[in-house]
Image (cartoon, rainbow, N blue to C red; front, side, top):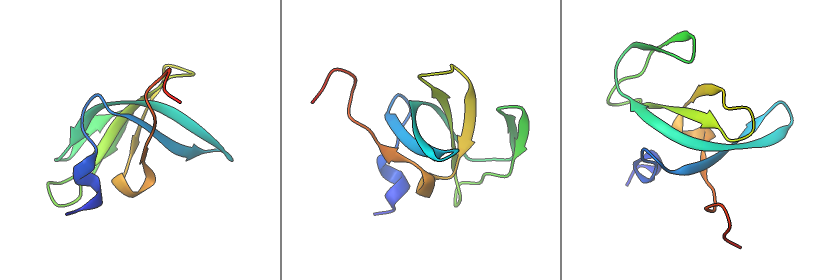
Length: 77
C-alpha cells in the first residue's frame, strides 16, 4: 500500500517547517493541477498533494505525501 493512502481529509499531520515541526489538519487531497495556498499545484492521481492548515498560524500550505507524518490527536498522550 502506498504511504500516502494513509492520509485523509481531517487527519492531524506534522511536517518540517523552517527547522522546526509544524502541525495541522488536512483540508483536502489534490489530484489535479489547481490553485491552492496561493500557488499553482501540479498534482495528479498518481502524485497527489495535500492542502493543510497550520494549527499555530491558521495559514495553509501544500505538501507532497512523503513530507507529512500522521500526528497524535490533540489531548492524546
